[in-house]
Image 1 (cartoon, rainbow, N blue to C red):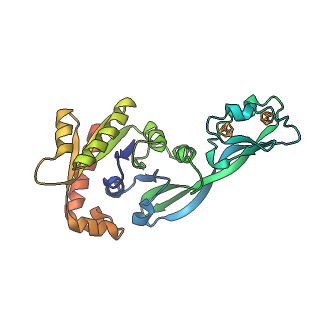
Image 2 (tube, protein in one colour):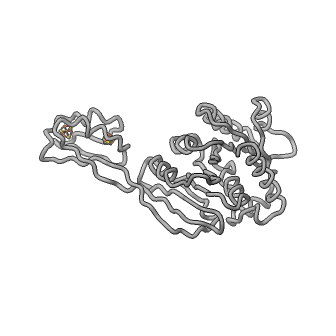
Length: 277
Ligand code: SF4
Ligand code: SF4
């Protein structure tokens, strides 16, 4: 079973939830799919046994074959090709590796070459398997890295997919691979706004989901009210706690350190197993 943990915004506690659920399961595969800013390794301090580079195909123009017809320039919707001073200029930062320019070139003057955009690390931390993706800073899309990660996931594993924040392309690609989503909501007006975006994403993609409310107070807040109104199952609530913030800032796993969090995450984990295994 693959569970995607997502939130409409950064800082809602997604990685905190993902790491602690993986910890409780004891034999899960934890996947850090937040490839622009992966931080799961800070908690698990994994031993890495394999690294795989991830490449995309980008165009290279053979100037001897090119007749400067500019069809490739007109085709490229990302403005990665330009006609400047009687030359076709390629701007790699804008290229989405769609391959279209090569198809429209009447001269077969465009060939593809590989460009490394990042890597994935595969390893383990005790009994927990670990995969994390890393997008190189100058690269624009982490989707090929997510696809590579998904291809490395063994079948029959309890997998926690720690998504990127928001609802962008890498989140969509990660959720696509999931059987179930946990949407983490931060109990504030802003948090509720972004929680709703994540719920809309799961609805649009026809994925079953439940909520975990983080930083919950004594009073019922907007995320709680939204869940009740829309009949969204609340899998658990994490009370707002200053000490928890300190633990997290030190890269410690709360369910390992504190009985209170061990119980909360054990309850959530058992419920997930019961409902969806
Ligand atoms: S591969 Fe696609 S995005 Fe890149 S230059 Fe060619 S047409 Fe533009
Ligand atoms: S489509 Fe081909 S031949 Fe025309 S400008 Fe581009 S690379 Fe040159």
